[in-house]
Amino acid sequence: MNTEASAAVIGAYEHPARKIPDGTVADVISDVAFGAMKDAGVSPGEIDGFLFAGVHQGLSLVAMADHLGLDGLTHLDSTDVGGASAISQIGHAVEAIEAGKCRIALIAMGGRPLSATPRPPVVDAGARYQQDVALSQIAAYAMVAQRHMHEHGTTRQQLALVKVAASQHAQLNPNARLPFAVTVEEVLESPLISDPLRRLDCCVTTDGGGAIIVAAREVVEASGKAGAWIRGWSETARTTSGAHLDLLRGGAERTSAIAYEQAGVTAADIGYASIYDSFTITVMLALEGLGFCEPGRAGQFVEDGNLLAPFGRLPINTDGGGLSNNHPDRRGGMARTIEAVRQMREQAHADLQVPNLEHAVIHGTGHSLGTIASSATVVLGKESR
Image 1 (spheres, rainbow, N blue to C red):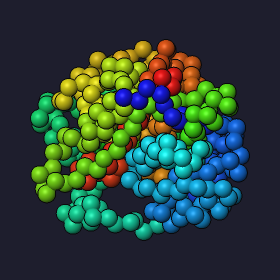
Image 2 (cartoon, rainbow, N blue to C red):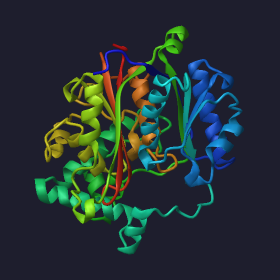
Image 3 (cartoon, rainbow, N blue to C red):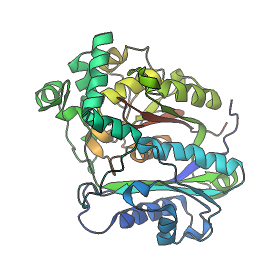
Image 4 (cartoon, helix red, strand yellow):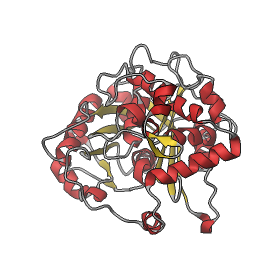
């Protein structure tokens, strides 16, 4: 149990654009990095930890550090676990701070998938398997959704309600890629992509990015800024288990148990969740894995209106999430983190700010729930104790 948090997020910045026709990915990352530094009240010369996963774009961490003018680095981390990368790196930053390797860490990411010339994909073992059996990314998630429906009676309408909740929040976000509300009927009538998932069950693709500053306790206290204290975290890799893959366990059940124990909380103490919502079924599995409902009961949990801010049992993704707001570089961990920080600092939209919020959880997945997957969970607290 973590009785006193050693670090907090004291700076956060999200690129306001969802399509960036000019410039480079490095320019986008510079914009968000300096935005986060400004929010935290620190300069590039004070940054001594840099965490950046850009190798899949051909951007090395060292080259990006040079581009940003980070000359005083004593800790580097280029961990790349797909969409969970930024969330994993929060935990890595805390570990580095606790080990005395750095005091102020910058975590940054960005991309221009809508505007830039596509690069050849990096084909890892999981992607190779998907190619060999002609399993597309969305088909893999559709397979998971079909399994959930078969095992637990989950309905297409319940899946659609995840998107409806995201859209209800996004209509209050002027920067959202899809800033309008949709109905269950509109989701179910949108084009079928891979049964049972329809177009509106799928996340948007956007340009953009974001960055956060994680600082040691003494830095936070000296700054006088409100920090989102990092109370617990965990990461894991879910493999295909020698072809004995349980499609309905994505890793959250493992990471949340450890993160909650570190933070000294349970799922019942969490008042807000930022969940990587690559598809509507991704949220369903995360809700169960994170302990907010029993396995197989996510459909009913969503149907009961629990996801809606500000007064639902567990408001999620109050910026609209990846389903309606943004999904920069096709990785949702950073964007979801920034909205959780806004909630903890009481900077979310006034109509969506969760009242009396004490604890929030951030959860991300990477790769594919249908084959290999990564998972990372972070618990934030308003107070350090």
